[in-house]
Length: 353
Image (cartoon, rainbow, N blue to C red; front, side, top):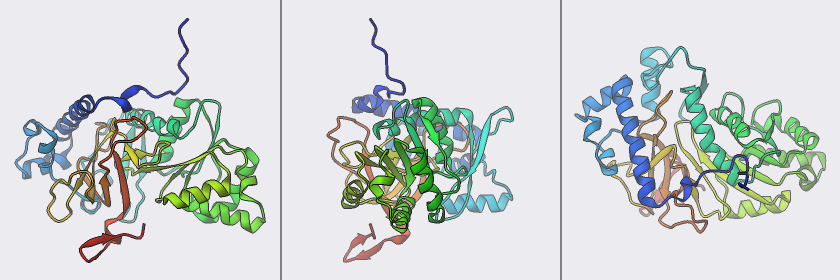
């Protein structure tokens, strides 16, 4: 009798041999390069200015010839055009699409996310939640606000995995902690997806109510934390205080990056099915090898809606040189802070993390 596959169980892409994985990624890169050149004026101008045609990109090394750009250039384009349409997005009036804002310290831009984008990115993100322990039949408390692209993707995740979503009133600002804690206690979710500052606000609200955090989180088995980095020590302290089985940290941004810890917590696996990550020297633009810190440059591999192609996130990070004990072949990375928050001391970059 054929064994029934558990709902939402990921496919085997994350254990593919490196050669197969790189071939898969490069085919996707070629597709988005061609799409950008043919359909998106923002990129066509940049390609032409660099005297570059997508057909001349024949290797990952060649990709470095494609000019990078920053959030400031996106905002400047919006200001010049007087609209959120920058020429980085494919519009189709027949699409069932979502227009949402990007958050961040550098300013607000917009993402146009049609149904095909949401399906592909949401299905990819479901893998992260599976790694984090979310299963069919569980209740998940979702703290991402409706305007955030994470909420758009999480709605797909719960459908894919067969979970029930609990959405509290309010946003992730700490001033809504009272309402969030009441929702947590009343609905008793198994899984919580939350921004780290809000989690600390919930602990402060527990202290205000003179309620033990373990009691408030009694039903919770796993937490998925996003929005700010955790240190290994802070993770262990939170696990002890909350009494949960494990806490996972996700990395990402609306422009295309998804990376997630596995249960070994040795770094964040880059989700190679939907994004390609490079680390570049911020002064020279040269590619840096694994183990060297530089600016995180992201290429989305999804050729629908708003496309970010060699986007310099201005985050300081690195691709880690070691393989993970879990056996997954997707590369590991870390992001330490915004580039603007670093200081140089004796030739070394120091970050608050």
